Length: 510
Image (cartoon, rainbow, N blue to C red; front, side, top):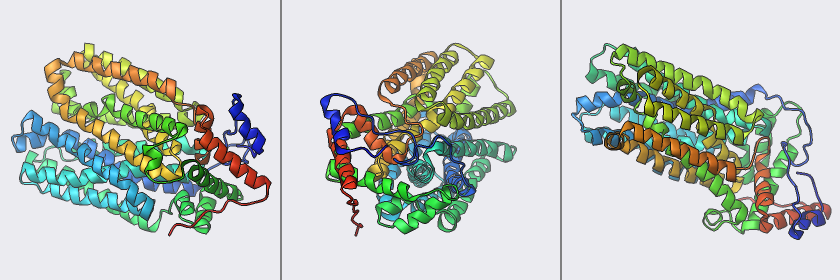
């Protein structure tokens, strides 16, 4: 974003589209050279990803634990669906509550809260002697999942330079898939152990990484620089930014941009509370449509109906040997993990729109293959579905809201995106077996193919390309797209202040 005059900005009202934003780390950055990330950036992102490993582990472990507890407690099909879906149901509340803790206490302490939820929940579920106790333990795990899904991408996006944000935020999805493979692997680790003990050991394994996460959050990871600036801690934010940017990079313009973006949003909205979301201007309305639509799309396309019930799908394809089923489970998990790495690199090179469109169209084709084939071809269809999901919708559904929502409402926006994502996930995972049984597997997967096509069209129409843009540029970028005069006029006010030599003063929160 170049420093333009009042007249240049105001000219947008005449009908001519004024372009104020561009790719770069801050509004004065016109360099074409891609920044090289220091080791600290990778280290902190990797620490945050460990929280995502916890999320993925539960999915992978539940895939194997589900059939075992069904036998252990004599569950009906609906009770098993509720057991699987309960984690998504409680994640709704975890995601909703996360914004309060993220904004009030910071991102780091929110990681600790999520980890505590995983530890308590894993111990209770692993020790369960009844279906009621099992579901009680799932409540704590679900709250941890909701917190984690909202925190991880926000923390990484606020810590990472714009040129690498797509790749680095996708690491949270890499973490989920690494945890997924780890969860699958526990079935092999405890293969041969008595069934009543096997599923308990799998769940107890879920207590290990959260303890490591607590240590990293308290002793290794820094606080988000965006959160620090928004709370008047500029000096602390400067220290963190100097760590995550290359040596010698001037971070003061980045801090200035963060403060300007917060002030622009304050001038445009006259508030930084929920009213920004409940009564949005045109630009914020478009942001909400894109971010929440992407979060809903990820689950509406049926990923949880495949991930949580992979064992059932493999059995239904005609694979009866338990060892072959476990082998295929590990293969599909590793395939998904490999393609997440590929997708993460492509988001920053190719862009968000092409990768998400390719992902959804590929998933749709895979659903058609699953619907009309059996055995080897059906397994190949599952592999294609998971691969296409991983290169686009997997990381993209969290990348888009974490980078588009402005700093003043990012925690609230991610909380809302997580809430809607988990509501849809609860519906899908709690109805898969009964719905597929009643309407038929072919019809069910053809329905999912249609949903994938619908959301591919939706994103092509409404999602602008955000590759390479700084977080502070997003509100102005969407204002340009929607001709939102409230934000454009706020920018004019800020630029006029610069020209007159006055600095924008940020009030320090009480």
